[in-house]
Image (cartoon, rainbow, N blue to C red; front, side, top):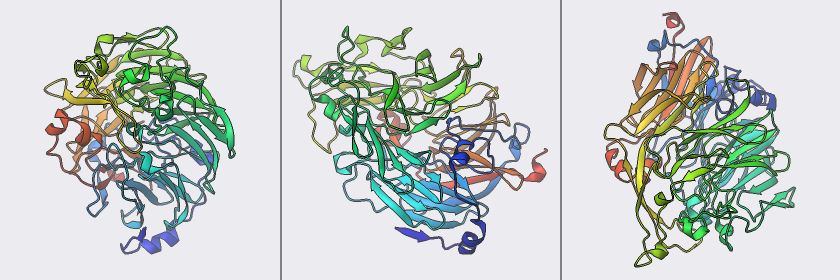
Length: 588
């Protein structure tokens, strides 16, 4: 469904301001350097979430003031995790329940709104969120909770095409921002808690027609131009029996594109079910036959064919729901080497080689990791086998395995919320959480459209005074340079700028600017609801602007156990805040 904005002047704005041409591949490739717009999720395809703008800086950030605020309206609130896009005088944001808005960049007035018609029976695991859109040509694209991909005319909000990614009745959904590469729109899928099969799909951005598909669990067949291509991995090499058919590995956070190596990089989620003993992963084997490839991994994929070029599995024999989907950020290390960095749910910060995904290093970025003693020289975990949830088949009643306390919790040392990298400091700014869980395994049988865990859990804070922790990390050494601690868990994205600033928000509603070198808090603003969205910045008429969405929700209130009880006082919301540094105050 589509509504046009009723604010005065909206229609006039559409006819006079939307004068720029189509968004091109070259524009997307140069997004980080182009400071007048934001065209990609991640503020650049390398996902650094770094802006070269320095009009706003350490010396004048105290002069940052609200310019306008936009309410998503209605009763459809819940978690607001979007990253805005900015182009041609318009800001585009997605909202909970699969909504998309076009907003006048100067005034904050609504131009048009699109609401997807969601069917009964959708099965989102972790709130009804959406993390952003993609823009290309004359279209704006986003995914919906019933696992569909929609292309809209960016000027009018009219539907250009609407395609099914997968069957929502089987547990599939879609929440990530799509990726545009060379005229293709590339997507993953969500639904890892329902025994779905993770997949990456590439479509023609103009027509929505499929070009290729690549399932990420071994044994499944890919397609290219409508015909079968190659099998993913080797059938039954690391999966027993027919478990691979419902093996999970959801590609639910989307991916990135590395132009230097011409590679799509996607992460994959937990293997299904969580109960590792059912997947032959409960005990070590000499041939690593319980690794359950390619779940809990990072994959390098050929964008032309969908073939897997390389893989790195962060948590083989996974048994704690440590998804491997977290973003992979391109950077150059202190010696000039092309590297990837990724902060995994399992609590380790990895550096990989960009040419082939090979392991370079791994260091803990959260405290009190219990499931592994460390990472060996090949990048494989050194498992603490006593910290694996017990096999229910070995229990007295066969119904509940041994309970263990594991840290980090299944929501991870870091979950979906994106980190930032500043080439100026060389540091990564990682939103993390210090929590653990009681976890146990249970018997489970797959049933389409039903939860497929085989585990129970209760999340608990590791410390009395904080759970959330924003850490500045040196990727060359793994050293934590500074840390900001927050009472509630952090669940929002981070942004760094050439002005020496790092921005993020808290569930308590504070939007904060830090000194990127010291971690000193330089500015904050109370937004009225918890921030679980992703900030951006851009330049307009010689002034620098910053935007972030405020609206508490996401996985923590739903899955957080004891932690959820400690934050149940937080109010939901749905407000997009835009701030401005007035030109006359920029020199102060």
